[in-house]
Image (tube, rainbow over all chains, first blue to last red; front, side, top):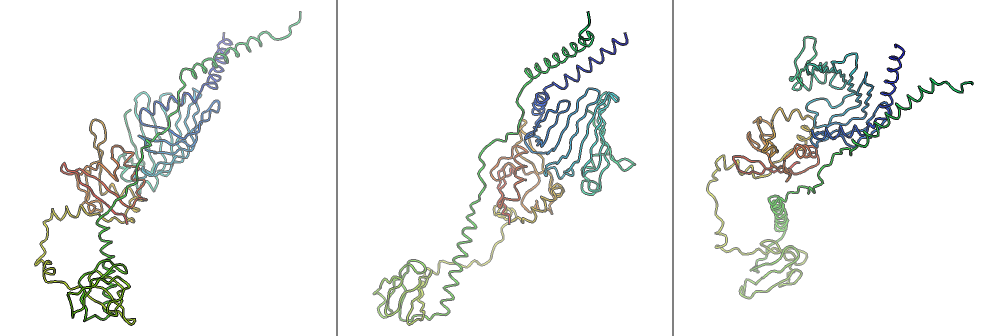
Length: 177
Length: 282
């Protein structure tokens, strides 16, 4: 009996792995693009690469309401079911956003694992400092912890005013989803 | 009978193969039913002619300056040259080295002669036509003959006793109609420090039927550069360089081009009236 259950799981995971490998990720990506387009977000000039178990996008220009807003060098999607992540690297905000935040972001990494099934966690590092984002799926709440850099503290006080200052020196921002 | 291959291995292989085929089938159906084109940013390819301002005021000023220089040249010539005492200049036509003069001798003022530039009259060669005088040359020396201005003609010019200052509103209106000078260094500064803009001015979009109709000045620091440009709280900016500001994109496109433009025109709605401001970036 145990042997049969074991065999079932082996076949099940094998099937999932093969399905993941054959899934037309570019088609799903274009579907997502259509959804984003309805919100006024367009990703253009990107190079799409289906790498079997992962999906990569290079040199993407993200526009919000037809305004070129962000340039992203690399985005990597890893979807394994039990561990899923989006790794975004070398982000540069448009100079029009310079008045709100420093334009260079080194990386943003968002992940969801079955080990922490009720939370979606993200980390980011850039000229603004470092940040951690926690999205509580049950309570539908976003919490952002920001550890601002010297540049952020010096030149972006007006942006920091939207966040609550913590005793530790960091800043917190909470938003119901 | 000996076994050529392991039956259980073959069974496992067949199951795995079936799973692969099912997975491939699902992915093909996904591809078939979900396929669509990607989205690219398409900006409307409308022809946007570059904004050029034809400034008649500057053109007139240029002509005035040119005229002034010419006058100075004539004046210089006049100071160096001697005047002719035995001739009368009754009229002239042309300018510089092209034209003719109507001259007469003082002894017989009614007997006039038309002399073209380069022609000789009583030993004098006409060399230059000024605005109200001509220059003759004799023996390598220059002689000036001025046009006689009658009393009637000179009497048309009246001296104004006292300059009456226009009232403030009128003065402001006159100032608003004139092009404002903007220093490029100021623009470069604000382009580098955009936060400084929002410290001095606050602008928010105004929507009608869910469409942007312009950008309203909600707050302006009266001591700032922006106030000196003629903008006031409550102004609704509707156009800039003939581009209707009906989207953020149009506004930001203009902001991004600010380094390269030399003239900027904005149209605002103030007290239900359209008002135009022109800025010359030097």
